[in-house]
Image 1 (cartoon, rainbow, N blue to C red):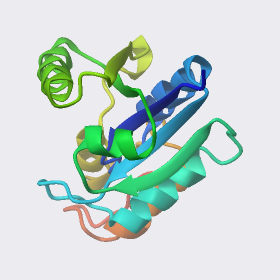
Image 2: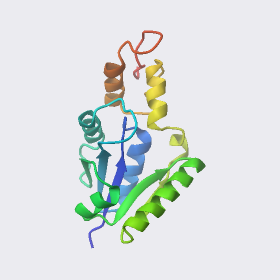
Image 3: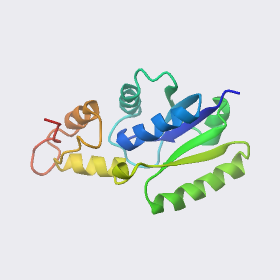
Image 4: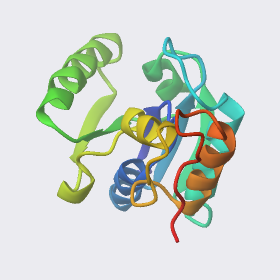
Length: 172
């Protein structure tokens, strides 16, 4: 049986924690579909097209990982993709409460679709997209949190936007 999992998120921007969860998930499932949600209710830095491009760059050459966008309920997207699993990452205890509620809601909507959560590696547990954006906006070094091409995209996007007038620090 071919097992397909959907790893949904806004990925604004994709970071090392996302990459770790997807790569680990690809060892458990035949295909991991990274589903970039294109109509979130929150303000984002990158457009859907930019986010998809960055995620595709992050997983270029990984045969078991596909990247696409979606704008429906995650469980409906899973059905259209013939995926039986929603893949999620857990960083800290507060993530558990949120993910637990989402898993219960998704199970109510689609009992045949399971949620599998992977515990983030300890050294990546502090990383989330909001933190990356805030640090980059203030000119901090995010090179240990995101791939080089994401650093470059942040630098370009945020050019001159933070109080010091500098740019996000790139890996030297």
